[in-house]
Image (cartoon, rainbow, N blue to C red; front, side, top):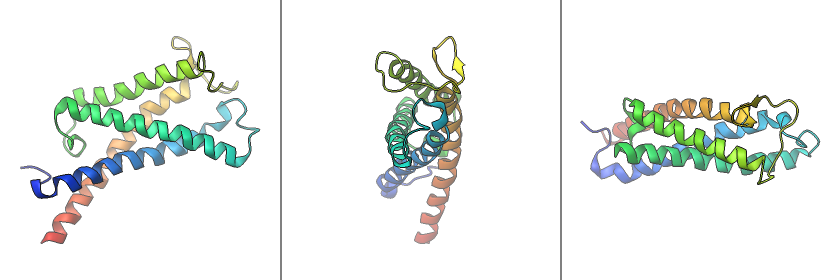
Length: 165
């Protein structure tokens, strides 16, 4: 039995993609705002400067999360993998992509890219030369994201079936 019949597959895929991206954006935005004191210059910046910087960072976070979801879907050849029992291999790809991109981007952004600096409050990951909070972000948020989106998407499917009956 398939969760999504062929007649509503495109709509379901669009809803699922929107859920993955928007829930990711929501979760990452609050994480970004919470870690403001751990970045140099943010405590002294105006409220709107901080909101703008965190919003820009969150767009990147949501896009990374969506890309990781898509790579997991391509791996298992199932765009709706999140709504079923998860395979360890799919979760490994989904989580691994986010972690790898984060490690590479943080390393570049705090080094050669000179995008930002950590404050003295940021715990360090010595072997990686990056902050612990951005790394931890990509261990926590993706797990919350897939549970939340699975719950939301399955409820959306039930509501659509109820409307048709």
